[in-house]
Length: 355
Ligand SMILES: [Zn+2]
Image (tube, rainbow, N blue to C red):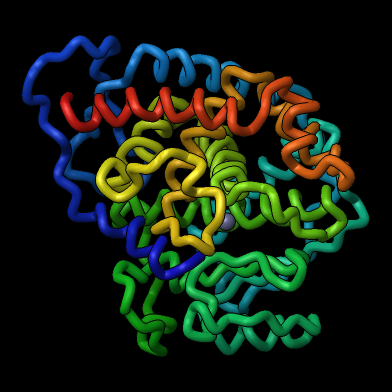
């Protein structure tokens, strides 16, 4: 994950909630979400639009369906864990979330049994780099200062890395990873800000989803797959797995508010139509990580659930490319869906700005 994105994510640690100022014709209602893990000042309040409430209700039922008839996953990856992390609470939670994701993906006819995935979990760069080297994996990390900051899927997305030090302690874009941080004792989850807990819970599952996506393409990179689709899918699969894993402590609606609505100030920082977040080359300000999940959530909720998303993964017809795969499964073009999602997000933006 790029530094700009981390900055966006932690920027809202100092967030001030939008206070309703005046009534408008926007239909919907106010709801409260209580963070299910970590510290917080007060429950988070948001005005959900009518369509958003419908999306959330539909997502809740898609999640319930996803949990029926789960079997142990076939492809669970080969794990390399830094000594000393055996009792890590955050590692344990990341693993629980990944396990649920593996089971749900495979339930939807998504077993890629022969796709090798190595998972490296560490607190120190030296351990992470030594494990990557032993796997013959030497990724280009120049964009992140030659370090693994938090989560990453590297080396053809066969190697997933989670740097717990980054997940636990990095809160500013220019903050260095030091040996002091690497040696600092892991805080209990219930003593850390809930936003950092959300980031940590999602981290490894997000990368697993990327790897799974790559397996569907036999490792090839789909150049025409929009960045907002790529990151939106990974974030939504991780979101679904977090909610499933902690279903006794939160609802899908809580997650939608905490992660999709209030995680960052996307209203200010991401105010272009979705098509502007197709390619990171033009500069997206990391908005594909925040607009992408909102759009993919709409796609899952209103256009055939998780089944269709997995079907696109499996199609991978190189003759028609991603846009053709999308039309084949959804019966509409990616441009048509972008337009629908832009309208949906515009209403949510209005709610954020006026309610
Ligand atoms: Zn990603």
